[in-house]
Image 1: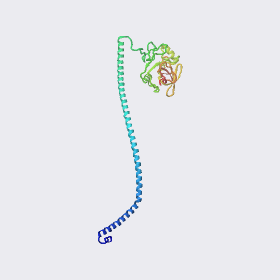
Image 2: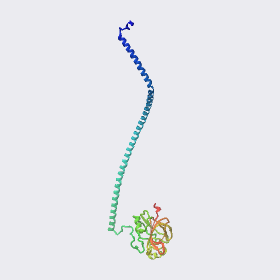
Image 3: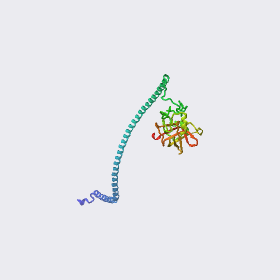
Image 4: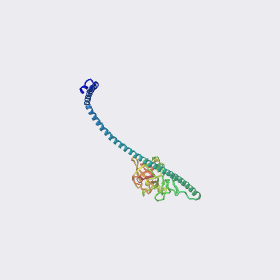
Length: 325
């Protein structure tokens, strides 16, 4: 039956078998080609595998870096929030300080206004009191009557000859009592001594006190004319005995003190002798003052005839700066 079938009884089957055999042969050829291509692509595939592995490693590293960056960013946000909180707290404190300053400034302004009002009321009260005293009593509104102050020689004769604003000078005593206020130190020097005062005499003096010199020659003493003339021979005069030679103002530092005068060294280094007489008006910035070397002084007087660097002082103001500083 098989052999019979191999004949021409089933040509269709035979043809199909031949076609299948041809397709199988073609498929085998195709498979061979694919195997050859696979064998040829093994090298690039290994390279791609290596690159893929490296890419996976890079991806892992990048992920770790992203995690670190996220942590740093989160920390930066936290610090920024903390800083914002601190700024807000500081602003609250600043606002509180500003408000307190404004409140206290208003209180101070009110206090100054009240003080000025009180001063004005005090001035009005003093004026009313002076007017009341002047109208209804014979009392004077001052404790000590100003004496001299550049006008005349005072009363009695010889009292306060230099016209000091210190009041009456005690006869045979310890000089003029009390003290007098100096509203402006510069104005006092300019008015009392003139333009010849050295600018080296600086400072702030608000009160001047009278003082005496050594025992043999005491300034600010009350005496009659005869005694003054007698003292002129001892320690120089202060009434311009040699007025034709001109009045001189000397400022500087005391470098020597003697029984009848002292020496002043000016800013140029020149040493000048200053004679003190009983009629010399002596003022200082300290009570119970004693003239010593190193103190600052300004003296006004007339040149002694024949002695270029010597003057008979009519007025001397001494300042002890080291006690003020």
